[in-house]
Amino acid sequence: MTEQALPGVLDGIRVVEFAQNAAIPHCGRLLAGLGADVVKVEPPDGDAMRRLAALADMESRAYALINPGKRSIAIDLGSEDARTVIDALFAWADVALVAFKLPDLARYGIEWEHARTINPRLVHLTHTALGPGGPDAEFGGYDVLVQGRSGVGFVMNRSGATAPQPTRPAVNDFGSGFSAAFAVMAGLRHRDQTGQGQRIDTSLLGTAMSLGTPLLGGFPIDDQQITELDADMAAVRAAGLGFDTQRDLYETKVQAGGGAFKLYFRHYQTSDGLISLAGLSPGLFDKFHAATGINRPQSGDTTDPAFQAVVAEAEQTFTQRTTAEWLTILRQAGYPCGPYNMPHEALRDPHAIENGYVVELEHPVFGSYRATGMPFQMEKSSATVSGPSPSFAAHTRQVLDEVGLDDDLVAGLIASGAVIDRALD
Image (cartoon, rainbow, N blue to C red; front, side):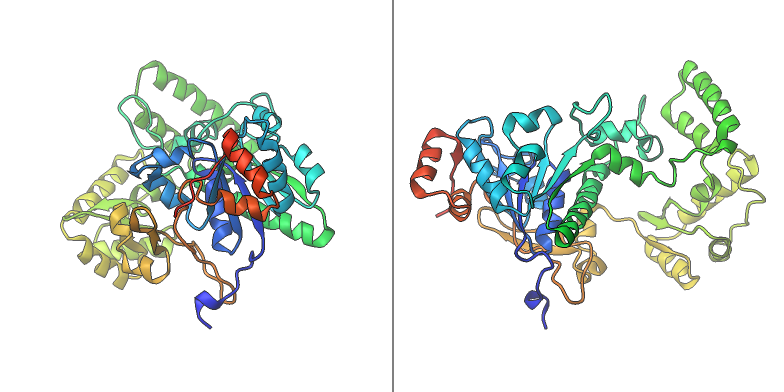
């Protein structure tokens, strides 16, 4: 049986997506890849991503990469006439993906308390920046804000002249897409068991803190160390020292295994590019030294000049050969390593292509393009990007007919501007 003939585990599941930008649209992308019919509801001027790195009118790189396999309709949620359409979509759908600030949910009639009166079997996912409770719950926000607030950005952000630069890609946005898809599947399973829908809450902050699990923990044994860190950090900041110094201080005092990350688990410059290494066990450390000929440091204390000298020797050693040569040497020694690709190089990586992590899509407006595929495969079910991103409002009439609105009503909604129809001929 070919992959195309395999059923999708979400075949027949209908999803309505009230979301822009990246996090929850990524969730919709994953659900579509498992066979769900995902109808994306866009505002009259389109998802904000349609204007990021434009390819044509209302078409962009960002939108095309984030939204393949969906259908697009456009609704002015602020119009009173739109309520009829929203309610019809809730009645039609199995899953609603909603990503708005909390105060806007009731304003537009898309909150769970209303949706459940229309369809009590609906799985209603509400996604916010900071979570559904707490003093800041009503504030919106983006990935960069939770990089800072979660504490994880302090470790992963790139260095800047006076302050750290945000990490790209927006790992918390796309991580939220994964966690939201996982939560939706759990919600559907609960519905299978009970016949009942429910509200599910996800947030960027919740995702960020979950991604930071190995770093975010507090134990009584840490109290004295943290007290000393806070005092030292205050002194460093008072002296006007930059972010690199602050992060080095944190890693020296708190982060376990800091020496390994300086020497064995990092990227190195080679004579013609960069290479990535990833070893975190004593046995692999031995292989690293055997392959490179570098003497093992006597301790993992990153402040020790002797340790720093070994790191400097390693950095110099790797510049003496090409990336390809080092890949051969390290792989023969059994040390985990790989190429350090630029994004366009990753799309050409034969290993990524063979595993389906890169797909070719054909768009009706701007033609063929490459995008990431599904991050997993299933033996007996389809998991694949089924088609390109939808053209703006190309499916409005089609979807409104499917949800049961008659032709005269749809015509009136279009005439009033409550919905927009731009179906391609």
